[in-house]
Image 1 (spheres, rainbow, N blue to C red):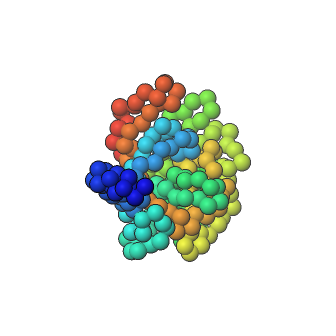
Image 2 (cartoon, rainbow, N blue to C red):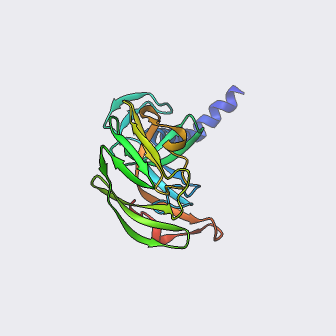
Image 3 (tube, rainbow, N blue to C red):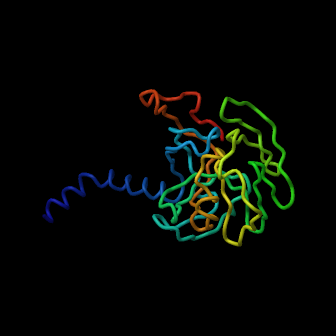
Length: 216
């Protein structure tokens, strides 16, 4: 057994070393994350593989959530990836409220710190409407149901220290802070600003070339 192990190590040590480095890199520096649901439509669609910058906020001990050095804090408008303990899943949502913010949603119109956000209609169909939301200087598109839903409104809440309020861009079809509560700072593993590649689940997993390296 010992001889087999030594021989295997000698024959494959370069490959094994490469694999260890790759896993360390993906754990602490950058990775990609598959998006299986439409909770971030129309910004991110099912089948997108998004690039996750894991050094955007913290330098962590590989394979852990232990922070070795704090780089920055998530900002309002950031698309974050976090390991949600409550849902038991890795989730992708947009930061809407940072610590200290007072956030309210009424009929899919956000109000932050007493300021009602402006919206501009972009497109619509029989059931939904896409709007340009100005998140206090950060513009992005959100999708809402024309008839609303149980998620379309919530009373004013203050985001506590060490937590963030995150919503999906597909406002009436997202299990976000309205379902799982505020996102703890130490659950956030990185930020995404681009799609690496995209596969169309409804068309035999064919690639969507127009979304390769698409900026979010």
